[in-house]
Length: 71
Image 1 (tube, rainbow, N blue to C red):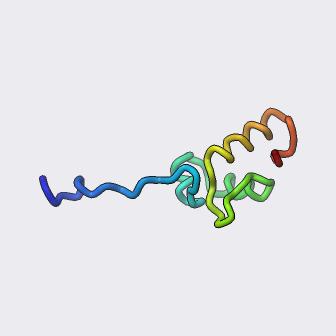
Image 2: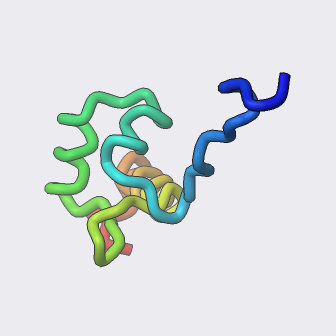
């Protein structure tokens, strides 16, 4: 089926630079939750995107009670 819609690939997501909307869809979170985490110190890249590894590490630190998430 050349030329069909299935031949077109979706752009790959970059787990080191997800937009807020991409992170919401990928993680299945509510936008408000992610915005609240960012307001409380979750790390973002200079352009406002989210690195999933850094975000996961921050969540781990916060939920374990090891600190305030500013690792």
